[in-house]
Image 1 (cartoon, one colour):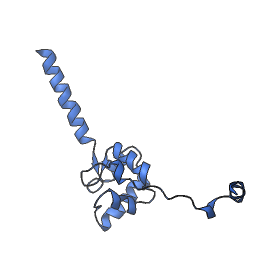
Image 2: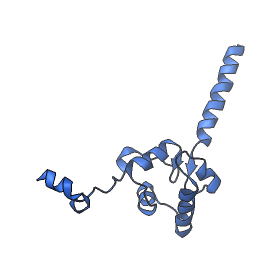
Image 3: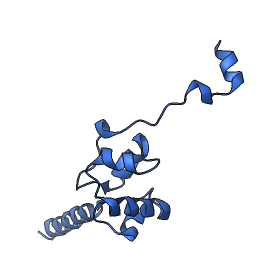
Image 4: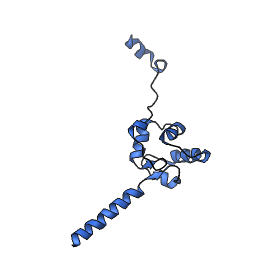
Length: 114
């Protein structure tokens, strides 16, 4: 009986901890944003400045408005507990990083490709 009670209390505490791990970009303050692994003071400042203009509608809007927030980085932050309007990001929402153009490659690489 005591084992079942201890297990029930442990399960309750574990589920409560998971619920508090989510940080919504439209509601959180700088300290809460900084608490998400991968978000530092400069990023939280950028998020708060953009949110002051208008709240983020969804993950696509968040990625468009926050510099450097594309695909893998956004997915990692979502996995760390960051949400937009209470929703975590799924893989279909990831915007890929821009591809390098031929003009940005080094001349030696261009010659080797020919």
